[in-house]
Image (cartoon, rainbow, N blue to C red; front, side):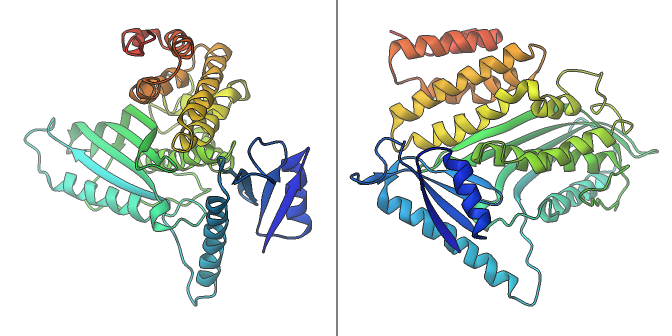
Length: 371
């Protein structure tokens, strides 16, 4: 059942209360404070709120708003149809691609690597990570590239590096934006031919390879949710924290004292209250900025400019954190493209800010022309 709320103050809290009191599936929040929305306009701006979070839609035609509401309702009806079926439907959250590169390992029987690649593909393609239901076109695009640097055939130990990348579509366009891209050089594990990879959510594991894959898979999902709604991935990211905490004895990359850019440090910094601005950045940059670019490029770009102030705040809050630098490396080309247009004053401010956050990319930031 869907409800509607028209609010003037405490909008989200009042709408959430109505959702709970009336036991609704979701509620459509209209705010009279949004310019260009409501009565007397051909456009509207609403927020769809359910028990998992909020989805703030950009200002758009009332026809488009109606379609978004119908699409969400259709999704609920689809889920209900599955619940009424005589079997339990499961939905994989990820749409992964995987490559295993063994060119650095010479003179070794390659069967073990083929077995490893098949096991990894099977695990990543079929493991269910959460209770959330994903339609096929909603699955998160991600890539796992494993490079085997050393292999001991006697013990089955492999010393590897893993590059993990994920992306999400930008609303109203055919463009996909990269959300996460990280090269992990501390991926060591033991594997023998025909080993099975198994993981039970909520349970610790003594298998380092399984722990690493679970860590990155859940991190990808949590980050994706954070880009869709403010702090929307919290429950999933708590699981990532738990994996990192319980894996301290499994090897390098997990220990809190190793580096500022290992698995432990990434999730610890991301969930640290001191770095709250960095989490806010994910939502403001992606959902309120990028997703609005197709409707109004100038407005979307202005919101992205505002979001970069959160990036600067995060850098100032914890100067040793690798997250602000990682964000600029991931978004470098995208930011240069976004600020190929706009006012010179805005471009200069962004250019100065980015140079302060990541001075190693100063030459790249010079590509943002201000004259």
